[in-house]
Length: 305
Image (cartoon, rainbow, N blue to C red; front, side):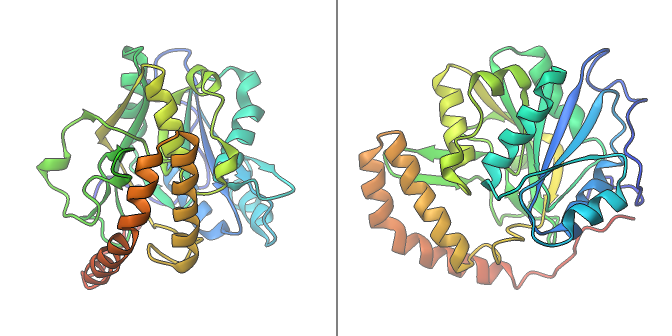
């Protein structure tokens, strides 16, 4: 299940030579009306001992007590309060713009409904520090409620067939998913980049609002000649669609499918768009069957010890 430490309210700012002397990394967590999950995420981040690490919470125009609760729980963490919901990509962009004047070396974008392994950061940063052609790194991600099951072990994108999918999703974690490899796209659930590369790529496209912004950024990164690396030595756990009613929630499916069509249009993947629409009913039926079968698995939710 990995290494999670006891709950803490102080984020360690030093003591771990994980990212090299004088180097800095900003972890950006976007919150929207979900202080409970964000606070749990910050509790897990509090166990990451890393010299030069700083955390920024971007509140995406929450209408509840999120900002108040997060500031009460973690007074040492800056909360950037937005006046409206800019979507995930827009929130990440706003957070990055806010910290870029500090000239951070690396940036990590992290969903608020995640828990991280205390050693998750170093394996993500190491390839970025050593290989100039690696622009993005992404960890192995398992379900929080089923920590032995894969949610993401790399991404597949085929603009001809219209297939955009996670490798290994809802499959039992095994040696098959333990090998570092280049992948088609990094999920925005957790991805690390050099700040300079994110700036050069002009960030996430806020037109996607939710879903698809990570695939779009990944395609643009790869078109620039750089690589995306799946790093299984880094591990986190994901609650999965906490703000959208679960994997097969109607709202999520509607937004996700609209975003996929927008993705194909932006990248002029006309055949992929047609293929996607033709195969959509079959994918939906298969997805419902897989999710129902998956929900029968005994829950063993990750807890902070």
